[in-house]
Image 1 (cartoon, rainbow, N blue to C red):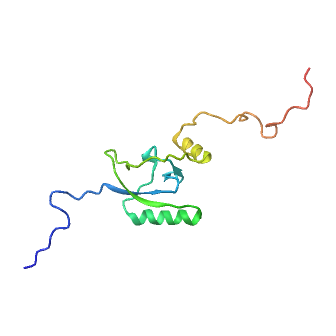
Image 2 (image 1 turned 180 degrees about the vertical axis):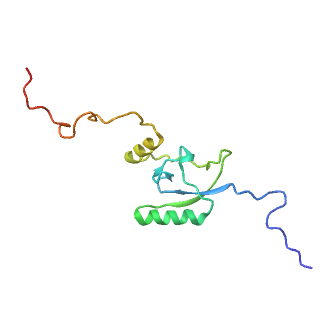
Image 3 (image 1 turned 30 degrees about the horizontal axis):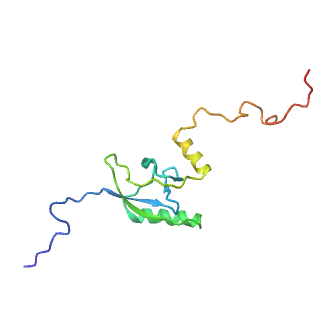
Length: 131
């Protein structure tokens, strides 16, 4: 009689603790807010259980940005369920960093400098002499 060997050792249970993340050429990760994040806050990074989902997302991203050089990486999950990733050493572009800060609520309560003015007079000095 033919007996097959188990595919996994008996002492190591099968656990789905690996997820897949998308990283670009600058070390930034694709975020849940549909923008690149630096990875310093792993909870903001998109993670998929299946590699083919991440590959499909990377394909869609690269079809919109021909300069993108991305990679799908496997990452272990921490006890909190967040991917264990290395944050990028390259800072995000300023517009992306502002979008992330706004999404995180860091700029709550701040208004534009001319927010109280009418749009027709914003930035226009009065031509009337003051006495």
